[in-house]
Image (cartoon, rainbow, N blue to C red; front, side):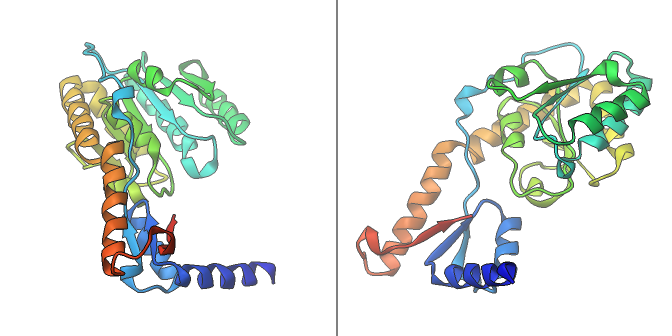
Length: 255
């Protein structure tokens, strides 16, 4: 009953807003459907990033280190990468994997890595306060999520000049251009994930080109300044629509 009333209140509040801001088109679609809103109520402003904090990946002769940055939860699909790592290591025995993040799935993931005989190649690094430095030391970024809104982890990897292998799910589709800045694979499937990672390992020049394209996209499309400009533009358009009403009368909700 409480859940029902919570939904009713949330919908009432949503209809009272002048604008609801979604971080991705996928999220905007979900909001429109759930709250039964007219399309003009929701605007999309992608998250932005201070790209200057991330150094472009230095040139290296091989692509062997794979990193994922995400909380260790089922939704993030780390188990899919653990499964894929067995195939990858059979072809590239010197491949290494780093899981940055902590969460309730850690014990299960470590146990599965041991059962598959790949535990020696996977580092569970826990939480990190210096993700830019860790990304600068890797070659391929992977995010095998089963569902996503608009993952900042991919933005960070793009800013670091890394090629991405990620699930073709949710807001990831608005970040990664398949075949240009990375590869999109079906969520929950280890074989396609392994195949694309091995492709990058076997073709380091292609991987480097994808990483450079990803960094260029981060600079051009997903900078912090561009995000702020998006908020400014929306705010001013709302003032204009309302006849330059005082700022205090405009209600903006962010999702």
